[in-house]
Amino acid sequence: MASVVAQDRTDWWRWFDLGRVQQDLAELNFSESAAAERALSIDPRNRLAHGILARQYLIDQNGEAAAREWETVLDSGGAVGWTGTLYDVDVRTYFLLTFDREGLRIYRFDRVVEALQRGTGGIPKFPGPGDQRFWAASAGCVDPSVAPEAFVPWSTVKEIKSGNWVLWFKLEHPIRVSSDRNNKSKQLDEIKVNLHGAGGDWEVYQEVGNDEPSMRARGPWAFLQLTRRTIAGLVDPEHRIALPASKPGVGW
Image (cartoon, rainbow, N blue to C red; front, top):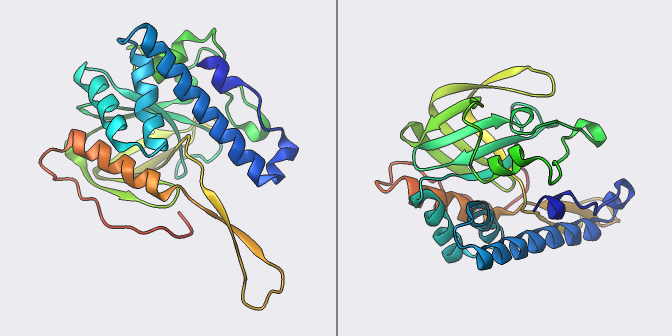
């Protein structure tokens, strides 16, 4: 899995080729799923593989298969790990989030890797195969000596709102989260997170008063809708957490 994720795909100059970027992301997602499915064919108890497919089947919008994988992980007492960007904390670093039956935990990226490396713009690099600490953490098996930045019991989540690019977990009690890039901390009464892996789409439209066509990004709205429904269905059987209606559009 480390080899799949760490493979170089998009050079900086290719970011201007939006179609190429989408193809690279699709290739990454396909390769992750294939590796995880192969791992399960060898050992059906492989928790990392189940956790990866719990995420990847959501990205593929295969809700039934995703729910089975989530249940497998959570019923075993495990957690699904997912890297994400917390925009209200620091847009230029990553965090690891883990989801289990009890709640949501947020870890700084520098505390779940053996040696943090940064690339263009200071964005963290995913570690290679030698970093067993990170790949175990990504399977939800975080080193018990590593304390999370915050633990949010599901009983204190009031609402999960879905946008075009992010989910908002609205909280009864504020939490404080710090960045591993500058050590600055923010107090949050909601967690605004982009869960990594799902890409959006691009559409061409005609601006009023402009003869040239314009392009704008559309976020993976359906993926986020499915993700929040799946999580809430597993951790909130009483339907206490509000899931307000949303519709696809532009913006967050």
